[in-house]
Image 1: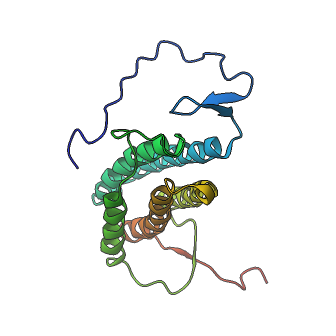
Image 2 (image 1 turned 90 degrees about the vertical axis):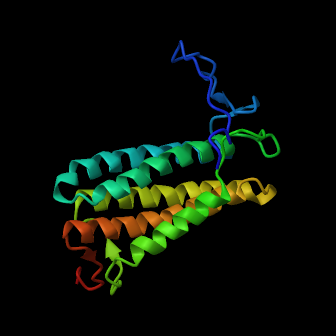
Length: 205
């Protein structure tokens, strides 16, 4: 992808609040005003929530970096994913057919890169012998939170897919990202030497 593939942002925020949303509406990227509980707003709002969760997971990851230098590898990937999610959110926040040529959006090559990263890191892991529960380390738990929010973002985007094709690539990306977050949660535990928490169906008996 070339450096000038997408239009660079031209933003000059002088005021944080505008009062324009006080009546419960907001503007999409293409200028159409919709209710704040519109499915499209719910979808890109959940993508934004996911981005915030990944930011929190990165800070947790960096705090643990002293225990394992290899964690920097995952930190770099997660930072890239944050940028990609912002691009994806730009697309989801735009009506179908209104996405402009150089508007930031998710790309098929980014889905393929996630798949390659999943395969590469999964090959370094011990095989799963049971379902696992979130935990084992703070970073693992944070990545599982990201995974579950990612699944919710995917469901919200799938809601938009009933009448449009534009959201299908975004849904594919989120589907692959949730798989990646699961693999990364396991990778972190094994790289840090922490035991994964295995599901024991009879533990409550």
